[in-house]
Structure formats: structure tokens, C-alpha cells
Image 1 (spheres, helix red, strand yellow):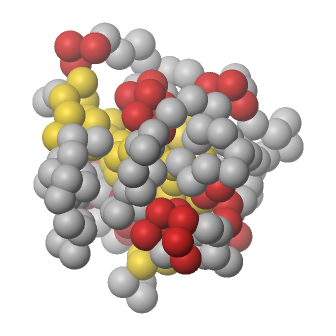
Image 2 (cartoon, rainbow, N blue to C red):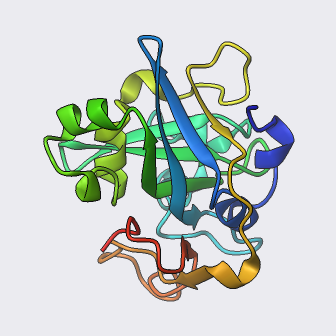
Length: 202
């Protein structure tokens, strides 16, 4: 069952933790490609200061740009962007409409469609989705899914309930890949992952 809009209409930090243990599904040509979400990062979730690691805050004085517009809501939609000239990144939009909030899905534990993922990635099982660009390639996520409503009955991509995760199984720390980001945003602990899961990104 697809998670409803209300699941996403909360702060990015809350949703980033709630997503752990949930299953991300992309239905492609009638087949399910899916994995358990094991690592996430929250962006733009600050009540008083801009998050200078976030697309929605650091560009255009906090106003939407053609690239970041989806990030400003409504909640429960996919925000897919291209980076480094080669990689797609998959995010879910959170929070209130009009404010940039999103959660980057950083890693998955593959569950369904593994053979197809291996064909797409040309890598062994252990390396199919242990990073944001890897999981996007494995699940065939690209620009065509930007803005997709994850909650719509006819959506081909969604998040559904799977495992129950207890708070003591979640570790948090600084986000990754923010080399040009000043403090406190560089070190703020808004990355969340499942302790001991082998698919957490290195």
C-alpha cells in the first residue's frame, strides 16, 4: 500500500527517519524494481536559517528555480535532479507547500527485480544500490520521474510500508558530499542510516 500524502507532509528530518525500513518501488514495464530504504539525508529543514547545502535555499535567494521548483511542494512528490553531468538523484518532497523541503534517498537494500538491476548496473549484488546514483541507475530512475506524485493510484513509483524500525537501530551523522558548504551546514547531523546494514553507502 502506498504511503499517503500525510506521511510526507512533515519536516524533512522526521520523514528521513520514517523512510528507513520502507520499500521504494518503481514499476517498470509491468515489473517491480524495489529495495528497502537504508540511508537518507534531510535538506532545507530549518525554521530560521537557510540550509546552504540545499538547492531550494542556496540559489535564487530561497525562491524556486526551474531545477528546484518541485522541491517547494506539494509533499509526496519525487524530486529528481542531475548532478556531476552523469548521475540522477532521487528525493521525496516533504513539509509544507511553498517551503523547500526534501529527503534524498541515499541507499537501498535490493529486494525485487534484482536480475534487471544487475543488467542495468553491470555490478554484483553488493554494489547495486549502495549509493544515491547507484540506486537511481538500478531502479531506472531519471528525469521522466521528476514531479511524479508518489501517492497517486496510477503512479509508477512509490514508497510502501515494509519493516518496522526501532529508534535504537538508527544512526545519524553529517551529510555527505558537501565540500563547498560552510558550517554549521557542513557538519549538521541530518544523515540517517540503519546500523549494520551492508548497503549503507561508503
